[in-house]
Image: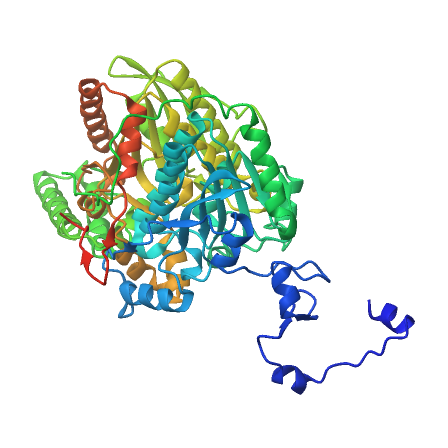
Length: 308
Length: 332
């Protein structure tokens, strides 16, 4: 667009590299897509989407929640759940428990999923947001438990379910416990389906592995953000098994083209779209009594016991 | 027992005994009683060495056994245990995947639906079976057959043997993740019992896709893992050659997973592994399945709820109380 500015007689001066580096972080933001310098306030107001090229930058968890929930309605749940190290997992003397502590410090949240209840345009929702900053959004026992409880809370309290996913896959440090979260969450989603409650699955950039192959793919409606990378095996797994996929394959646009996602919606329009979808999906059955849930006691934290 | 199988790297000591045995066995037919006696002696020393090796296997050694080219496959068990098997083909959408086989059969006087992952043996067969790595249409076939089973009240027995689902461009285009997720949801909804048997390798999402059993069994030397040890090693150790460490760290072997409460039963294998005596291995599988069937008949409940409860409790975590006090909710 530079030629336009010049045509309009605007003076355009390239910014010196040095000057760029000296810019205070909190005023300017450099777009990762087009390298344009964006005024931080505009960037924030546009939900971290570049107004010039449309590149979607990552949102923090609180920004994500604010962007979807009615102001002041979000109440976090299950904040106190913490991972254990069921396998005593160490990588060259580096303990998984230490890794967890580091992750919590760097991500600022204690798990790869933040969950809670809120309302969206007055409709009650059960919401889970995944956190890429926490161990690459890898899913272990606690992340799986939080997703599952978010689904169950939707069932129990007649809420619509919204999950915003971004995940590197299943967390290897917890071995098969992690893989089982796919079964656990899918079983909860099957229950939600029997209860006729809507589930909107939102794919943010970088969603791979077990998350994709369970709750992400099981949405009544699946929405991806533009350019979001989404697929089965993550890039590092593919690298390990020496498979190279064309870059466009594991992208939201590819998935839309092949019928795997319903919509690609730019973030500034996401909330309105989700709201409209929920309005349609709940218009008819809001009065209907949901299918009875399987009788069971409310499950609190319980570990597996070795079954002999 | 078949002593003439290819030795794995940790069984190299057996190769010399086997060569000696082969020479003796040639002579045995026309040789006198001393040759026979000597051959018996060599056989005994082979068996003893084998027992020694198999007494204490590492998880990685089990990974190698689970991948042994002569290890019995799903269809080998079908041939022995389900002689009236009728294979049903296709996913009704796109095609018929060779890496997942399914169909109807009789077991313990009951009609059952079988679904299993199938690796090939020859190169040619491996191409049609895609080395046991199912495409999306394989999972869609499994899903449709399981739904059919639900419709006609047939118990399902699934056999797991895969190094993972196929993850190439075409698989992404046809939604491999979506196919696996649908399999999981269908199993969660089914009101018929499902028994899953991990017979060799159960790697990642491609394995659990058909393994959401009310009961999950594993052969003694089978492995079941969130990810292949090589892929884990290359990501966490940044070194593929650390796969043995990764296998040990992830606790992939049957006895470890039973201890952790992640599976329900370990089916023993003949000494030296199922590939040294497929007949006996099949008998053990049959015995275990018969027992499971009678257990299921006794329990006779709401299998959907049973399955929900079964998977609902899987995971280890703790609850952080106010302040920094923690309550252990690990092992009780």
